[in-house]
Image 1 (cartoon, rainbow, N blue to C red):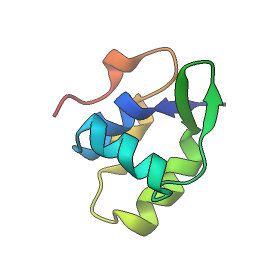
Image 2 (spheres, rainbow, N blue to C red):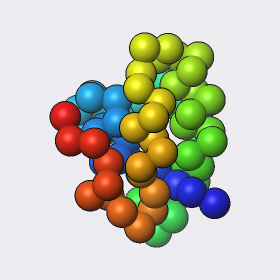
Image 3 (cartoon, one colour):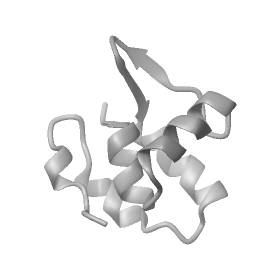
Image 4 (cartoon, helix red, strand yellow):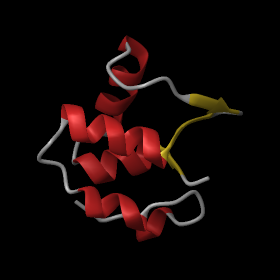
Length: 76
């Protein structure tokens, strides 16, 4: 299972990490999977959410993100 966290989602969407955190707290994002002190989502869940809520997002950027390689995410 591939995952994405708030920092990676921030890089993929071009939104500030605080914006991502606020969206998560207010329920704008799909339910997360809290793991220790990290907030994560499955990559499939975020991809589906982006298709509906941010149709102009570059979905190919998600393919380079995974739980082991934040450095592989695109830099905005």
